[in-house]
Image (tube, rainbow, N blue to C red; front, side):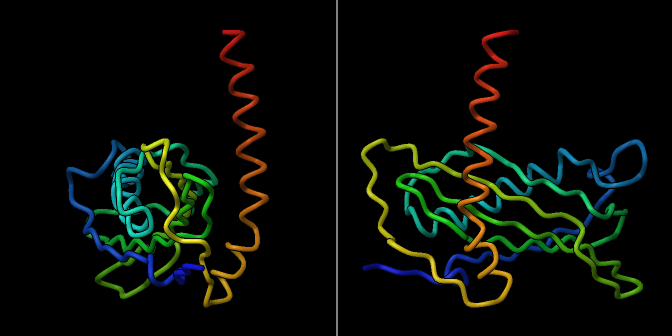
Length: 162
């Protein structure tokens, strides 16, 4: 049995908020944040798959605090669940006011990546949590998976009707 810890897959990146990142309200444009999160979180999935992954869903998205010009955005992403070809990555983004030295959780989300190769065999059998938050995320993965399946069915029905 091949195992990896959540920490083995973790990536941490930092991005400083610049004027090109802002919306008309003077805060970080949500689409810009999602773009950065998607690009960077895929690295955690690639640490498991070792080959091309594509984004299947971005869900459980929570914009909790706005980012302002000059803030730092520190992103933590780690694999918390494996399917046959799917890899769930949890992302937490901290906002840091660099002049005040204050840090707070500003954004969280779960991203599901799927390996593009339909003949792919997952090289890792199990993801092992090490911290309390990782244990919680691993333990609740089945609930998120059920919610995704329900949402997929709902979206298919919607597509038929529009």
